[in-house]
Length: 215
Ligand SMILES: [Zn+2]
Image (cartoon, rainbow, N blue to C red; front, top):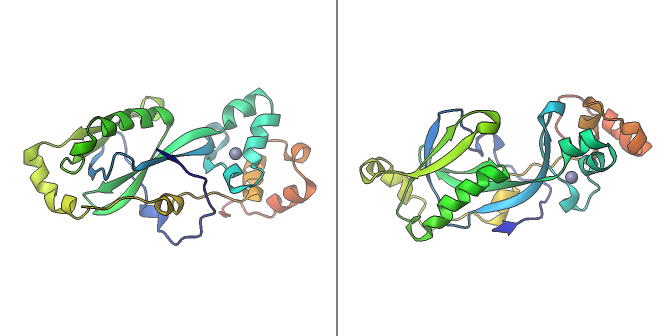
């Protein structure tokens, strides 16, 4: 596994269709390219504070406001915004024919990695049903090999990914780290006392950001 230092996203990748998103009970057919096609990165997320997954910007060489809030904000903020490992898996979506990313938490990743590494030699021959079961904390993502009979239906799409793999830029282009002022803006929206902990300039910059903008 590779742990990548993220870079600022300056690509033109269409992020709307870049990720595999499944609802409870939904499944798709996938091909796994190699047993190493996943990476680890670090991000912050607190749904209770309406802070959706934000890659940590410390690896960009910046002071990450969310790291700071978790350090100086006391128990509540520490628990909410502690930097956590996240994983991106590259999977060939055989239904759409595109190479996509699935983002996983640590516990979700563990199960997937076990399946992937159990049969590294067979990945070139086996397609999987990738399925989501459950909601919120009980959510499980499973990979089950397709039967030989069913495999016939996706054989052509499967063959198109022969010899393909996901390189580091592929992952980097799909991470979307935000600017420090934007992260401070989110903290203020979440009622974190930003004036106490951030410079006057950063606070001012964060207040220039409109609620619906993405910087
Ligand atoms: Zn951080």
